[in-house]
Image (cartoon, rainbow, N blue to C red):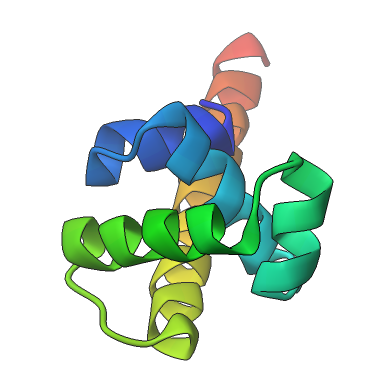
Length: 90
């Protein structure tokens, strides 16, 4: 499952919120993410506040830690699934 879809399904983020969250997760500042997404800084702040509400976080660092753990778990599960599939093929 792509990370974008995972974030939407797991936390109920909108597509726009998931795009912003992914940019923050890879280390972009809120200002740089806003520019890259071609939205105003105030719109980005509003989306970030909504992301905080939906994820139960209160600070950007806390959000990034939560998302990093969640996406690592997603990657681990995908790797495990691939390994099980490979074993079945042999």
